[in-house]
Image (cartoon, rainbow, N blue to C red):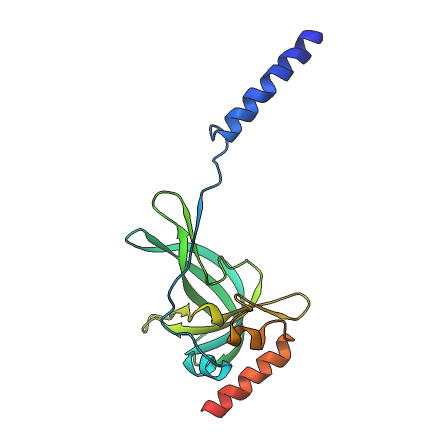
Length: 186
């Protein structure tokens, strides 16, 4: 019994080393955080509303690897639309292409748009169409708000003036404000 205990204690460090060296379990890939220069950054919430082709409240359902542009990966995020606030979209399913994902060298790329969407999470999204293929993209860092279980919106960059107008606001009231802005801009 004593020999077995000594052998077991001698094997544990070896197994742990093998696991962490990636022999039995792959190591967590390196994540590259990148800041981007957004094409559109708005000074007011009205500008954000006017600049969006589609505004929705939607639940994230899936994420799948998308196209590669050189070494830059994209992810296709599937959403189920719960509420259409602005624009026209056929059906309840929505695809939002996002810059980021697994790069050819195995590293993960994440930009300053809020990172990966969380499955099951509800969002208020301000989107632009990518041509006529039914795929959209998030306008910028001002265009994404998680709807928390507490009913409050959480933006990507609360220090931004536009994000601050929505951040930590009661979701239903903020969504009604957006709907009013949409009606005024029509």
